[in-house]
Image (cartoon, rainbow, N blue to C red; front, side, top):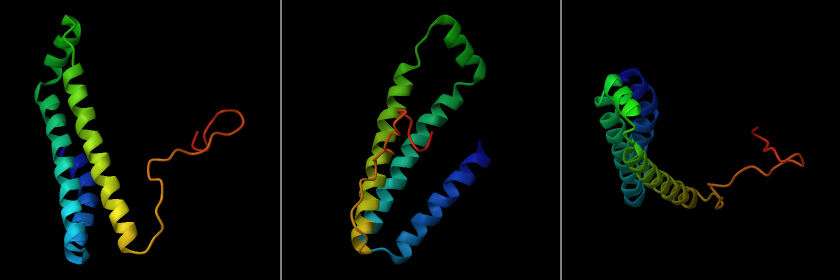
Length: 117
């Protein structure tokens, strides 16, 4: 798990550091909020990982629901998405880039598929 965290969080921490170095006070605040939100998601993942493989198998066999954990992960991921969108919108306005619909999906083709498959 450590390699995965280092690989994925490395880019995030690099971007965070660059925002600290070059961003405005509002940009830094929004970047801090995004990184904090990511940490909360990691806490949910760590909780799930700490239960161990055997315990998760036992829960499945006994029919113990993991829905509360999934719901908490979903709730925290929505906060990450919101923080990410707010930072992106702010940075776009700071750099003079036009606004964009950041959560838009590709238009479906006539067959109903999206361009991404």
